[in-house]
Figure (tube, rainbow, N blue to C red):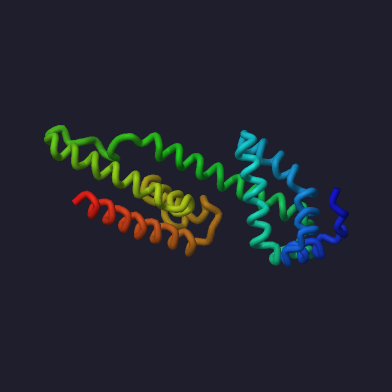
Length: 190
């Protein structure tokens, strides 16, 4: 059994931010089962709940110095971090499911198109899908909302819960990365 850490949340988070193992253990003992339970309820599987626990603690390590005890309880802050990550995971699932259900070209194929044109279109769609897998989940979500979902940058920002500048950056960086990946694949085929 780990030694009990002081009940002072601010002291616990300062020690955790300083990479104190006892503080990390105390934080884990205090919140891991609750985060796991939240993951089971929101995400519906043990594996996803386990991933949520891990992802939450990674995010807590990165943002431990931002905890401000005057703004609220540590419990509330930790569970909001976990909830936010669970919602992000659900959004990714929805967007991935939408993109996987699109099996054909975005528009109807031209009935007058010959076999060469159809093969070329099919090849282009395949390369585009492969290039999309090289985007980060955040970039892919923003790009799909903007281009496939017809959303504005402001709407993407609202749906993703991010600043509009971040939404614009994600969309632009996704387009640039997609362009580079498509060019790279085309040069390999030549």
